[in-house]
Length: 166
Image (tube, rainbow, N blue to C red; front, side, top):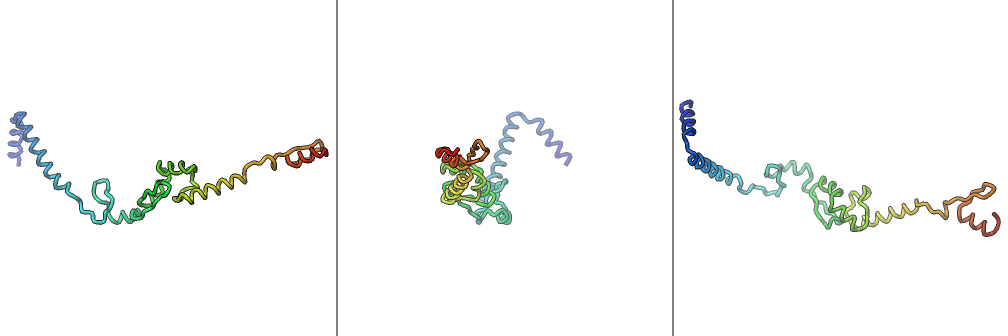
């Protein structure tokens, strides 16, 4: 082994530049032919998604993450999301936000898990109706005080004033 190593070192030291380039090209050609064998189509009968290494992820991991479940969102233009995690994450993404903006609805947490346009508009109308009840209405809630210290709402005060009682 030592003798062969010495011979190889001497051979490399005596090579000219052209010979070294030709040897490098031969190695590259051999490496390319080996990688072609590796790049052949990977057997994937279950159509599993590819992992970071370019190979299909294991079936148990596919099932664990629920990637077999398809969730459709009507607000996003019937876009499909595979897996619960992707579905939950999509509510913060641009496509869903744009769809909500087009409907004239703010994209708040109230609308998470709602993917139907009908449901979203119905919920938005209910929220607006509730906010309408909680709004400050000056004709009922504005208070006036007379000279004696009695407190009336605006409507009662103006009625009494018109009658000349105050």
